[in-house]
Image (tube, rainbow over all chains, first blue to last red; front, side, top):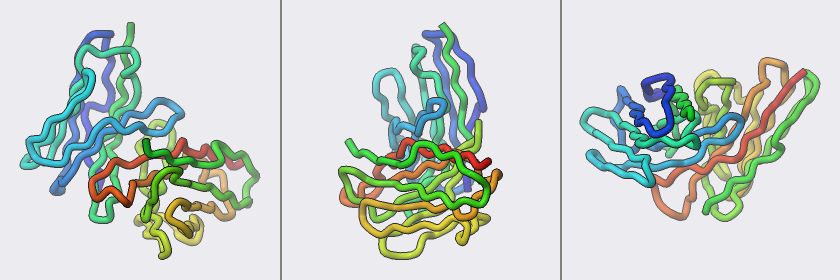
Length: 109
Length: 118
C-alpha cells in the first residue's frame, strides 16, 4: 500500500521554507526520501530508520514519527535547485519500496 | 558511490515489437532489483521484484507474461516488454540495493528508459 503525501504541490520564492508530509496506514519501519527532476531518475536524499529520528544535510532535513506512522521533510531557505518532485518511500518485507504520489516543488527567483 | 546503469535510455518502436531493457549494478552486487513504471506527472509504481536465480515477484495487476523479467546474475536484471502496444509507452526505471551492506540501504536508481510505442 502506497504512503500518502501532502501537499500535492508547493510554489515558493527563493529563501522560503516548505514542509512535505508522508503518512502510512501501515506500520512504518523506515522512510526514504527522494527527489526527481523532470525526465531524470529519482535521487536519494535520506533514510530514517527509527521513530523519533531526525536527519539533515545542507538545509534539507527530515523527521520520523514511528507512532504516528508519518514522516516530514523540511526544506529551509529554499534554493532554485530544490525544484523537483519529492517522493517518500516506505519499505516492505522484501526490501521493496512503495512511493507516495509525490509533491511537486517549484522554487521561483 | 553505488551506480546503476540502465540501457537503453529511450526506445521508439512499432506496435507488436518486443523490447528488452537492461539494468546493471556497476560497483555492487544486488540479489534483488526492482522495476518501476512511471506515467507523466505520476508516481513510480512498482511492477515487480526481480530475484537473482529465481522467479520474479509481480505486483497485482502486472501481467507476468507481458513483462518478462530475468535476473541471471548478481549484477544484471532484464525486463522484456513483449508484443508492446501504445498503452505500454511509459518511463521504466530499475533500482537496486547493495546486498552486501545489510538491510535498510537506499535504493539506487538507473537513469530510466523512455519507451514509445507507435
